[in-house]
Length: 203
Image (cartoon, rainbow, N blue to C red; front, top):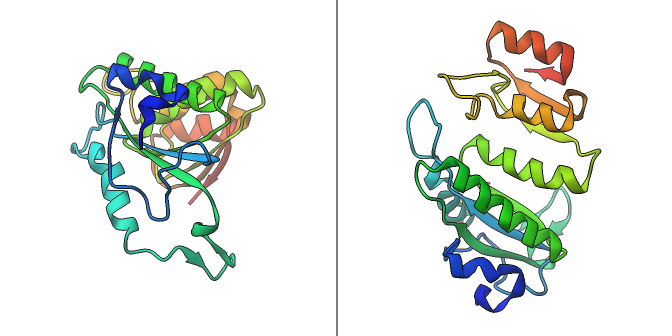
């Protein structure tokens, strides 16, 4: 796919996009795709062990073992035009620059009438995405399916972490526009905050 020839990916000159094995059923035709898949291999604030940067490519590899047809929905992925544009190249340890690159690309996709679909990458990739989309859609709602609330105000001395991402998001969209499902773990303070401020559906 020659993204460099598409005006919405003119920032390819900055070295922001890398090639990849595509997700099952994806096309290489960016111009006809309504939805564009991008890998976002962010691995900056993980506290258990590193490795989330390998997520996008592993998801793609495992997708090769899936069927494109869903008997439950009676729909086939091959009936839809979606493009896998590769991975955003993120400089290790430079969180501010990682956020900037994510936002540049989301802006380009939205300006081109495309629906961005991200493969992560740690939870924190959600924050720069929400910041961009919320400017276009002030009533934006976020659905979170997670074992953890990620509502800490600070974690290990940092306000920008995989464990604080949903707290930062409530500061953008408001707690009542955050819907949290499946939460089974968190601090007492997180659960109190969630029960008072968000739409909270624990496990």
